[in-house]
Image 1 (cartoon, rainbow, N blue to C red):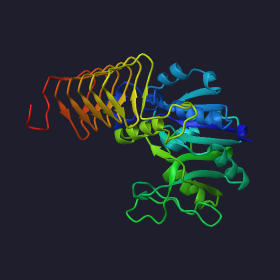
Image 2: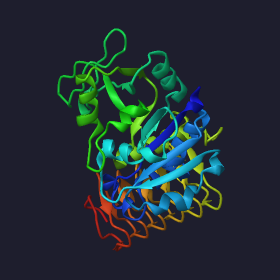
Image 3: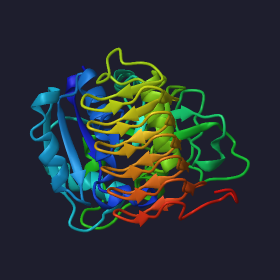
Image 4: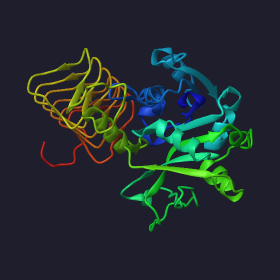
Length: 357
């Protein structure tokens, strides 16, 4: 049954909230537990029995095809459609219509890390004979999201904007199944928001919009904080991924990396290929991209260290993002959301939050 569906993944965004890392790579291609983030979603799609995937690209579009090619390595057939100007979520879906062959189309936001059973969503769509089915996930604090209430039959009754007093804990999880003719109805050639325009119009015209509600793992990876937590959850086995069989623990160290004796790696830390960690360094929930270097006695907590960047001896990086090739001098302290742009060099002791040197 599942093979009757095509998959569409929207990966056109610029990923501005993850700058400076996204200056050199689109967000879905950033290393997450050692592979480009998008690989986790593609492997889940393949595991669900869907083989035909269309990527809707825009920003740095060529990077995706260079890495994934025709998709054969993942058991998929991948095609690429590039938007010349941004079309929004609805416009992006409409834009790939010529490449779609199936009657049911499963659409994904390319920056969500999820653990739900994709086959179960398709089953809900088919058994309820829905026109559109939305994956809704229940969250403990829905105030930061738009809410989607459903009736006793699971039909969606409204799309509500963010509010301080949400009437339901169900939120739009960024995964939808469309019957093909409902993609054909989306206006072509202009920006369209699926959340603000397409879905409310479906309710108005009386289409059957079904909710598939669960409490599966779900995280939007748009901010550094969420990116760090999602990566750590993959390493520790809290977030599932078919591409990471059996690798579960406090850290994930890739081949060619060097970790000196006495270094402490905890909290779902990832050490990329060719990266180096010095003696006595403490990495807690850190992400080191390939070739990064953390020198002796340095502390890196809940931070992303870009390709080839260097953290000097006894430096402290907490809740920060260090761009590719940057160099942070000895004893520097970077805290609370600091972002260092690629190639920037900070001298020894050049930035401090405390008075002792």
